[in-house]
Image (cartoon, rainbow, N blue to C red):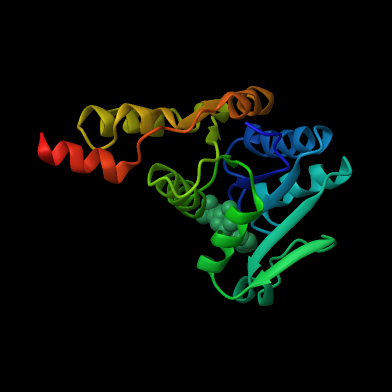
Length: 199
Ligand code: AMP
C-alpha cells in the first residue's frame, strides 16, 4: 500500500489499571511522530489519549484532535493542539477521523474505544474503505477479545478474510509493519452473506 500519512488511534479516556497501558500510549505517540506519520485522535487530554498526544507532540509529530462540541464545552479537550477540529456530533467525528486517516489502531480502552474500533471494522468489511485496522495487544489486554472473534468466525458470523482484517501486535512497530503489508479482503461482507444464503 502507499505510504501512510496519518493514522487514527482510538484509546481509553482513562489509563486503566496497569502502568503498561499508558506506557504503550506514549510509545505509540512517539513511534508515529518519529516515523513522520500524523496522529488523528479523539482530542481528549485525559487518560491514554492525553499520554498518546503528549508523546507525539514531544517528538514534533503532527497531531490532529477531532472532538464533538459537547465534549469540547466540558473542557476535556487537549489544550495546545495546533489542530483541534470541533465537530457537531459523535457521528461527524468518526466520519472526519476516517477521512483524515490511512489506518486505524485501537489501544486499550473502554466502550468508546471498542465502539470506534468495531464501527471502522464494519465499514471495512462492507468495502466502504480499504484501510488497515488493528489493535495493540498490550499486556494481553485484548487476548480474550481476539479469542471471542475467533469464536464469532467459528460460529459462522464472520468469514476468514474479514477475521484476518483485524490485525494485532504487541509492539507499535510490528503493527505498523503489518499495516504496510496489508491486503484488503477481495469480497465484501454483503457479497459473502448473500453467497451463504444461496448455500
Ligand atoms: P473509552 O474507551 O470509553 O474511554 O472512550 C474513549 C474513546 O471515545 C476515545 O477514542 C475518544 O474518541 C472517545 N472519548 C471518550 N471520552 C472522551 C473524552 N473525555 N474526550 C475525548 N474523547 C473521548
